[in-house]
Length: 256
Image 1 (cartoon, rainbow, N blue to C red):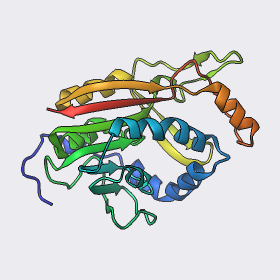
Image 2 (cartoon, rainbow, N blue to C red; image 1 turned 180 degrees about the vertical axis):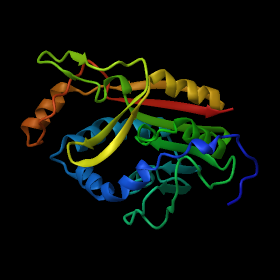
Image 3 (tube, helix red, strand yellow; image 1 turned 90 degrees about the vertical axis):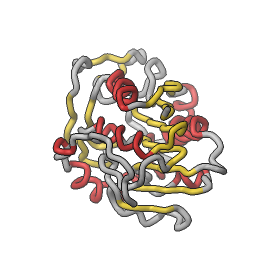
């Protein structure tokens, strides 16, 4: 599809190919990790990510929805949009053939302008150095009046410290400036990946400066009573969690 207009994005900055190199080797391991009911990562997705993301997206029976970084296409299977589009930087063989899948980079989408009622980037932008380029692409392909939904692990509490024995979160890094964590493995298994930290306000300001209006922002916290009960019931996790800081942040934007 051709673009009807061009957003002035400096694509000379799109030089970091780490995602393109690593994800083809990681995608199978990651899929097995999040589908394994005995793993911590599966619990967080089922109890924190999925219900809140589906709630913020809402009814999709009459919409054209794009899931960026779609994985196996679970979001489209759950929302059942009138027209479902999915893209990822690697081939995904398990996607329902009714959804229109393409291999695409979120930083340089080929979809036409003002095409989607809803665009979603769930746990995707944290792996890109070029955050601005990806958000600009989301803005470009979203219709005026349409919705963009971004989900991230809360940057102030993801891999920047650890909970102590009382559940208090002890920060060990300087959160005022962007940095990257290399050789990171999700759940201790999927990777190694490069995680790009930037202050939470950077996400909000990039959305605003790109032209989105932020409609709401909310966080999800682990319910420790339920988490501990699931651990006792067979969930294998050596990770220390706390309910005193948020796990996921959800940003809902509108294109004016």
